[in-house]
Amino acid sequence: MAEEELIKSRTTAYRMLTIEAVTVGVCGLLFFVFFSLEFACSVFLGGLAFILPNAVFIGFSLRKSGTGSSSNTLTWFYIGEAIKIVTTIIIFAICIVLITPLSIGLMFVSYIVVLLMNLTGLAIFFNE
Image 1 (cartoon, one colour):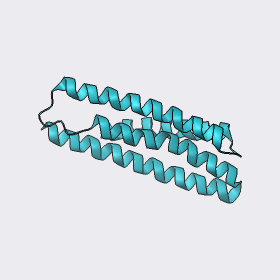
Image 2 (tube, rainbow, N blue to C red):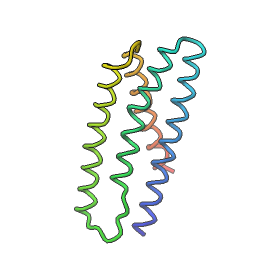
Image 3 (cartoon, one colour):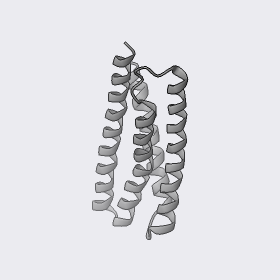
Image 4 (cartoon, rainbow, N blue to C red):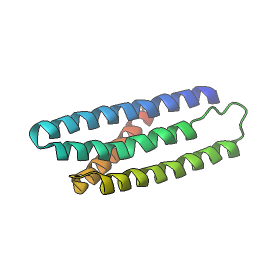
């Protein structure tokens, strides 16, 4: 039973990331067409700063539980969360320092919108 729940959780998490990635891609293209390359890159990078660390987190936190104990599962969850936070900070830092021109405000707005999409989507998926 635990293996079925793990597979369902992993599938739901990756489905959410796919929906978020497609949404960021479409929004980035719309910003490119209607505004500028700077705005499009800012939207893409803000989305990337959310999606990439969360993909890493899913990989660590939803590992095969098999014979592992609950404390082992919790350890991997904490490791995944720590790596997610550090990766997010690194992505933002690299973008801010190395990418010019960049609309930092739009990048953070894109990150927050994808974060809110994730929270809303998880509420919908788990209430089904």
